[in-house]
Image (tube, rainbow, N blue to C red; front, side, top):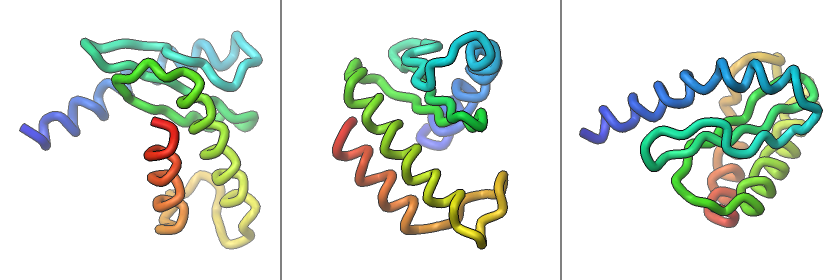
Length: 109
């Protein structure tokens, strides 16, 4: 059942990508708030200037916390991009990045 939930969460996020694609070109805002819903889950999105999409599937209504979370994750992402050893578009395999994002999630979500 837990594996099914993980697959369902991925499906929900992938289904929301079409909405994100449409909204990203029609607004100048980076934080797109809640763009899609499925049952009690909400998809919130943050689009960077380079059109990288940071997506969060959650069940909370803490818009300010979610926005702050996205802004700080964006700052971490920029630091990764500035690393000369990182190839843009490749998977971020840094355990330090993962640890920082999880700490931010505990802080804001």
